[in-house]
Image (cartoon, rainbow, N blue to C red; front, top):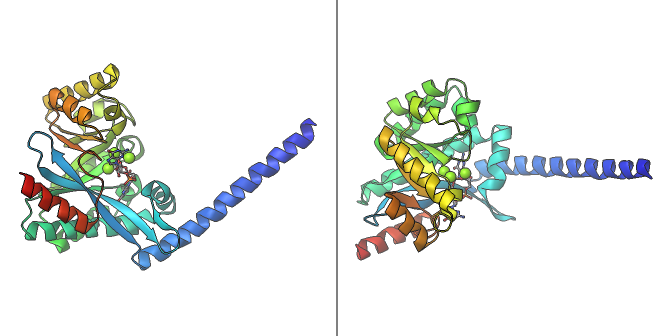
Length: 280
Ligand code: C2E
Ligand code: MG
Ligand code: MG
Ligand code: MG
């Protein structure tokens, strides 16, 4: 009995692995086609000054509009793009598109907006990364002081020469933001030693900040540390009025989340900006 049981488990296990690897190969080749055929697009989620309620910028979030499968979320394809290296050409396209769009918005007279672009570890490890960023920013005509790069805490564990790479980015005038702050490699020493500008408090702390004393205490501590060493803080995943109230009391100035707006396509972002102008 034991033996046949094991055999079955083995078969099931094997089949699953095989199915997964077929799916992955399909997805990978679909992604190559998608880059060529312009199936990717960017949505922009407004970032808000909680005190003044004005839009201060937006985070660029990539979307994949597959002709048969519809919209595929980045949670599905970004990890695969990272494993296969496709994140390198895709990441370049994302940066280029985001900078070009932001420049258009500046030229159209929207208040200067900062754009945040997520960058994967794999991209930072690319020896040509800095040259590519420099070229893309120059060609877009965007003043680099309006660009932020979002990295996750994992780069501090995974990437060699992190300090040198981040410094090169900063020397271009670009700001560095630590995404999902508090969930990753939680050694606090790096925020003292590394060239970073902004901490982006992870949504898991914001979600229950109004009902959980521990979450609230963590957010307060992050705000205090950040303030004393001169870093900005932005809260992500704000969904409720209660979240906004709690963050205001704590003195957190900036936030983003469904409470203000979901990530928006270009037209919808423009409509959102117009509606905010009418209100304020
Ligand atoms: P992230 O950078 O931490 O982005 C925040 C995610 O939370 C986004 O999911 C956003 O749509 C979602 N979100 C925003 N407000 C709320 C809220 O109030 N409640 C909740 N529950 N969620 C909210 P999305 O767009 O599905 O992206 C997921 C992750 O995929 C991102 O997390 C980022 O790690 C990665 N990603 C997205 N776009 C890119 C990209 O262009 N390049 C790279 N390298 N990674 C990307
Ligand atoms: Mg992000
Ligand atoms: Mg995040
Ligand atoms: Mg994330």
